Image 1 (spheres, helix red, strand yellow):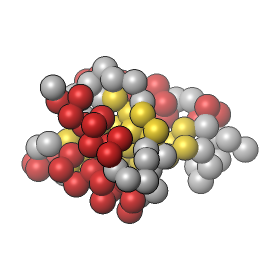
Image 2 (tube, helix red, strand yellow):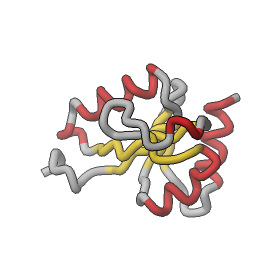
Image 3 (cartoon, one colour):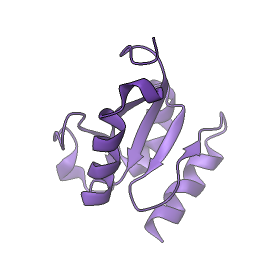
Image 4 (cartoon, one colour):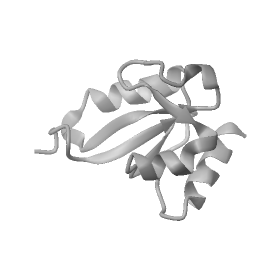
Length: 103
């Protein structure tokens, strides 16, 4: 049942580079692991809507708090070599995660 596309933790990957794409590929290749990649966020507006592998860039890092709520994100994936972080209701953890990714 974990491999069902509607089950599992919803992951949003921060970044759009080769490492971010590799994280998505590995996650997508293991549907039984219980994770679903719902998309990427980046700080480049030109990438929004662009499909990197299949999911696409769904928004900007500056919109992260609203994207997390709208897309019901459970965890942020580190497209910049950072470990995944669980999402808090306050959005503070999400903001800290993004700050660390781009430092």
